[in-house]
Amino acid sequence: MNQRPPLADHLLRALGGAGNVREVENCITRLRVTVADPDVVDAEAMQALDQVLGVVPGATTQIVLGPGLVDRTAAELEEALSGAASGSAAGGGDSATALAARGEAMRTEQKRRNDTPVKNALRRIANIFVPLIPALIACGIIAGLSGLATNLVTGGQAEWLSGMPPLLGPISQGFLSLLAVFVGINTAREFGGTPVIGGAVAGIVVYAGVADVSAFGQQLQPGQGGVIGALMAALLAVYLERWIRRWCPDSLAMLVVPTLTVLITGLVTLLVLMSLAGWIAGGIADGVTWMLAHGGPFTGFILAGLFLPMVMLGLHQALIPIHTTLIESDGWTVLIPILAMAGAAQVGAALAVYARLPGNTSIRRTIRSAVPAGLLGVGEPLIYGVTLPLGRPFVTACGGAAVAGAWMSTMNMLGTSVGSTAIGPSGWAMIPLLNGNQGIGAAIGVYIVGEVIAYVFGFALTWFFGFSRERLRELNSEESEVAGTPAPVAVAGTPQPAPA
Image 1 (cartoon, rainbow, N blue to C red):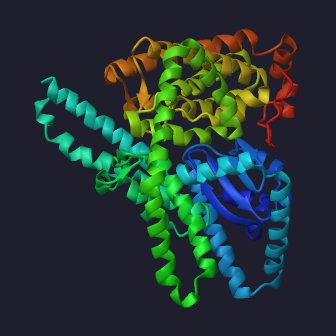
Image 2: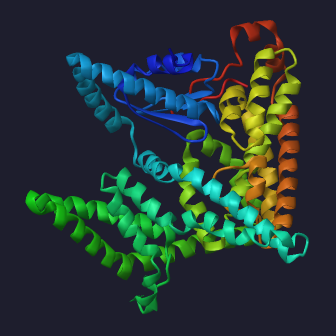
Image 3: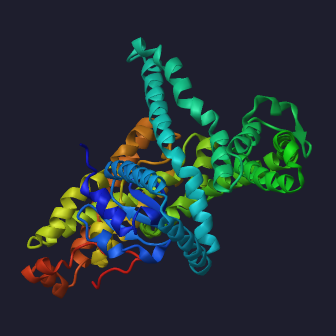
């Protein structure tokens, strides 16, 4: 008889039981659990588990587990919840119904008190775009392989690969050509509309026939406005669908509601939204280009230096639409390689912590397990497991990232842009995704130098400024190890680093 691993059982108990869990989803490193009553979630109990790297409690409790483990744990929790639901149905328990009703009331009150427009907007953006990241990564890597094969064939080094680009092209571009449709589906689902209607109106944006339509005196282009136009169209469809349902007789709803929703939204999309979204998307691309061309080192210094705090707070999700817009516009996003310097600097900082704390086996064990993920660009295990709880090393890691970011933006200003063809990986995992205006080789070279700079400065700044003498003695003492000082801290809202 198969039994669930202990981690899933422990998490479920700490979350308040199956009756308190509404939804389970995950990204690359975080498990996101929507709960009915946040007050019964025991964040400290979860944080005490060996495999848990950090906890952000709330109506949507975030549990940082790291890559691989988070996927398995999400599946195990879903299985546990499914079994609990079956058992509840068989027993007809009134207590479960009462708990759900009480939890829903508490959840509503909790959201009223704690949720802010900014947090809600970021959560919705994440829910729309994060599910698309695995396909974006896959298509980006395949596109990189296709580009590499094309270069080898063109240069005469491997003419036997001439048949590969025609095969890899459709595989890598098929999803990207319909990305707007998937954004429309997820937008409608997130905002309470009919997903397929969201996809239908978003599909208008990428339909080749829009080239026959003129708006504001200009001929439209297929894909104009990209994911921004798709998001706008799907949002309009959601609210229009709700309004039509309010007055439409039930007997006619199946015919009238979707027809009027798609027709009206489609006309507004063609005549207004595609032009507006195209202007916004163009403004984003031009703005980023101008910023990197004129800001020089300062631009990369600020962007990379602030990225770790953004990841810590989950604010980096707000950048996903910008990355997607740049990929649609230029074929790659120049922001991701700059921001990736933050993860590399944190690896350097963690290695400095490892070297400075020979007497603390607990922290060194955590670093040994988290650094491999950090090298592949997954920074949360190191954030929540090492640098953030220690305080100063988190700040010095940001400093190392800023220096490396300055290098990346300087090279961009000098004429060698480095971009990522997909959203998701960073660290060494980004190398297959790199491209730029000087070709793949130059992009990889600049990026590798940036990674090395981040490692070196993250290490050096942490070595010299990461600890006071008293803190070093404390962390290297037996008392510190026994007391568990270096253990990761639970995070509530804005994480509070341990005293440095």
